[in-house]
Amino acid sequence: MTADGDRLSEAEQLQRRAAIPAIFAQTPFLAWLGLEVERYEPDDVATRLPFRVDLSNDGKTYHGGVIGAVIDTTGALAAWSNHDFDRGMRASTVSMALQYVAASSSVDLVCRATTVRRARELIFTEITASDDTGKVLAHGLQTYRIA
Image 1 (cartoon, one colour):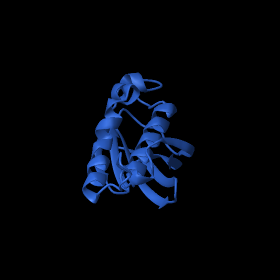
Image 2 (cartoon, rainbow, N blue to C red; image 1 turned 30 degrees about the horizontal axis):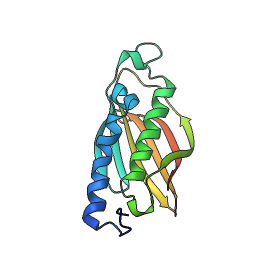
Image 3 (cartoon, rainbow, N blue to C red; image 1 turned 45 degrees about the vertical axis):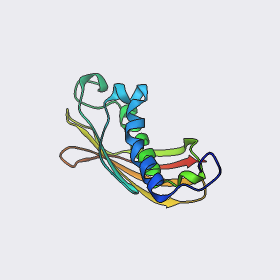
Image 4 (tube, rainbow, N blue to C red; image 1 turned 90 degrees about the vertical axis):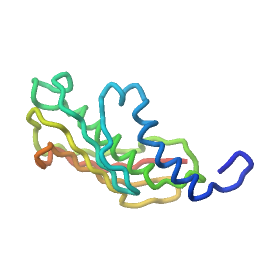
């Protein structure tokens, strides 16, 4: 809502949603990580993390924590991508489940997140992480809260 209590117009909602990727990119951790937003559509987001040796276990395989961070961030972006800002702007991941299914091999990490359901404050997302050849590396289920 605006300062005087009025609901935001659709144009204002779209403007705020469109600003989210740039806001995420300014956070110190994500700026250091170098995560790139490739697609940011309502309830459908794709990100890419260019491969860097310092994000790996052995010079070629991403550390699982890196994959988890990218999955979490991509899911959060999906949650924000179609958010109604009249409902609030305080946010956090409530829960996340990850399944690692394969190792990477010195290639970019690509994640795609879709919103499964939106409730009053909770948003449920599904995220798939793959390498840039399409090989699936991990799956994530996230519950995100914006209030």
